[in-house]
Image (cartoon, rainbow, N blue to C red; front, side):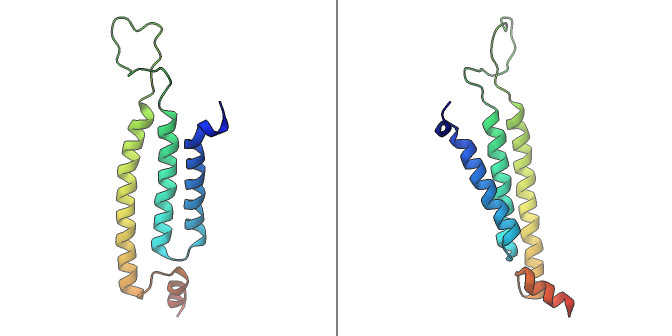
Length: 118
């Protein structure tokens, strides 16, 4: 297996690092939320990449199942649930940012901290 054949893991690592950078280094709350969404998408990609098996069939059991290779459906099922949770988390985060913008007239983390200290 060559290193370029594993492009999905390279995309996972790049997305993960971009998301982690945005969450830790950016001061804008919307950018932090976008970074969190990228981070989640990278984890989704990793789990989905582990699911298919080369030469595998759907795990439907019938009389002649001996010697067959099956793909694992569990990562796909878990990711469907995680996507729903991720979307609702993103929506809640955006709603909280809207309320913060109304209260502090800013979405910059350092400005909000300064206003809280006063």
